[in-house]
Image (tube, rainbow, N blue to C red; front, side, top):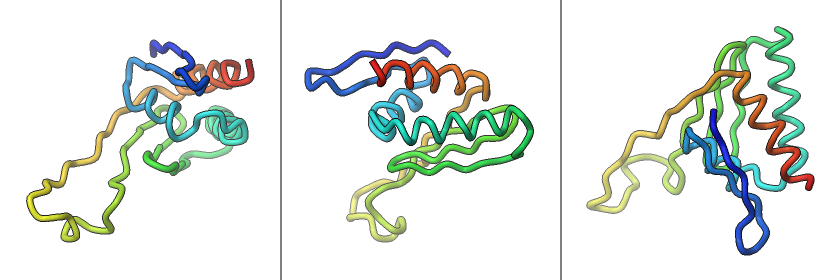
Length: 118
């Protein structure tokens, strides 16, 4: 997966990724949180070592489903408990679902960790 990291005007870390959801997830849900990055790296390592078969990681706006081969990232529907509570005229959109290989996520997380530690 191709990616690029940069800092915004407020020096906050941002990611632009080939798979857009991962860039948004890193930029807005993970950010500078070194503990979350370390936790995610440990989860990926345990999956790669076959210590675990499946892990779900839920953050503010995204849910990751990780298994020993791949990762799926899905947006969470934020703001309303159910579709019936939506204001009149608002359409419910299906959550965004994208994915990558577990190795790709490992490389992305290790690079992000290094970037936020600079």
